[in-house]
Amino acid sequence: MRVVIRVGGSVVASPPNPSLIGKYVDLLKVLKDQGHDIVAIVGGGTLAREFIRIAGELGLDEPKRDWAAIHVSRLFAQLFAMRLGEVACETIPVSLDEAIAYLKRKKIVVMGGLKPGMTTDTVAAMISERMDADMLIKTSDMDGVYTKDPKKYPDARKIEELKFKDLVHLFEKNKHKAGIHQILDPEAVKILQKGRTKVVVVNGFRPTNVLLALKGEKVGTTIQ
Ligand code: UTP
Image (cartoon, rainbow, N blue to C red; front, top):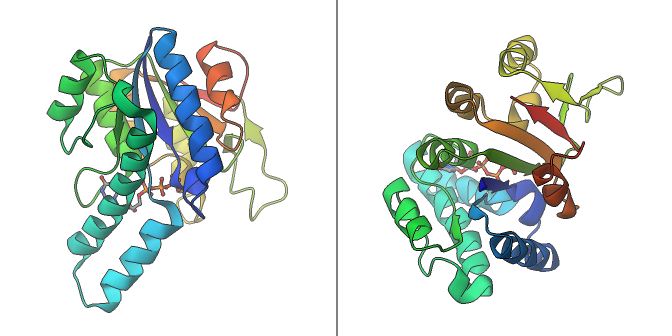
């Protein structure tokens, strides 16, 4: 299968968690050995947000603040790639074309952000579209998509299966409730909906959830 794994910065980088990164690296190797084409997109988490803050204090404008965060995400991607060794891309792709070129060479592709004004979710959606991915798995610090932000609303319910149009509706309903949009960037959802890419959102603190999602077992929230 052609699989995109969005490794949440909230999972491996908030704070940076070398042991968990190691587990993801092992997982990526297993998936590669199983014959899958793999692209992993890593976010920068709280460290990226810290750099955005520092760049802001330096008086840098928003695109430049974004660049600071992009570099942090690429640094995490580089750690993944170095730990993966020769099965992975040796440099971090800075364009979709570069990522596709590495895929053609049968390498595991690990990348971070691409350009200001977007999120790594959107990068994951764009590469999914380009490689015609069978599945995008987003690893998150939550167990899936909830009816509302579970950190704020104790009556929030986890949704096991969703259609893209219902997700868009959920975003609309929760527009003013910070948190809900963070599970999957609405910009990314638009691209994924158009490409009819199956998306599974799982709790990333248990990397084996990625294996379950790939096997089609019931885990997290499936959106299609
Ligand atoms: P994300 O919010 O996508 O990363 O990017 P994350 O840490 O993995 O998030 P979780 O785990 O889903 O919560 C962090 C910031 O980096 C900049 C944006 O400012 C974004 O909010 N960024 C990232 C870009 O500007 N362009 C990119 O392509 C990626």
